[in-house]
Image (cartoon, rainbow, N blue to C red; front, side, top):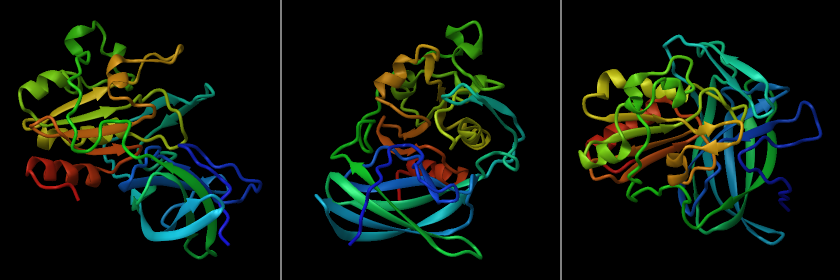
Length: 299
């Protein structure tokens, strides 16, 4: 009998052993149908890299668990070549410095494509096989929604009147990056929609972090600027208007985001074609952007 006793919700699992394998799930929104499921793995206090990982899915019915499918998770190194250094603060107030990708706390993560046939509680059995080590298994449950709370794929993007560089005296009022990039604060989302311009919108707070799976998401988006800035409107929306009082910017509320970071790709018709919660690689992002610009389905 398969027993699932641990529920994970965008957080680190608690275990009784210091050396136990621990997942950090960065995908909090799971819906009926296909999902991009991203997570990190920690072993003995360090991120586990390049393991072979398999996910076994179980539909839960009370105490009964019915096997409903399997998926393979691939390890995705964070490709980032531009040197930078950022300081963010965790929820407990501690500061954390990220330098380049080579000395960052997070150098990669795992991604799997998983599908759920119905809403409700599901069990996931994760089997990780590290190089030159024995396989480890952990089990947890997740809640699957009938529909998205954030803008759904195929739905119209909110016509937000986000603040831009021209609205503020200091760009740091709307961007907590160590070196805010003015090119990410030039266009209102609503104006880009009116202009029928494709968009890449990144919701992130570089200075303030809510989980250990922090990464240079805004900088990853910036790597696409040289190639696509003439075709696409790029926007960075900061999360907190007032971090101390946990007051988000109105645009964050409009998009109904309860976690960060998020990246949305919107096409010329203002339809959401792709979205990524948590860490994302340049390859994933650029592939989805190319398919959107070409009018192709996102695969």
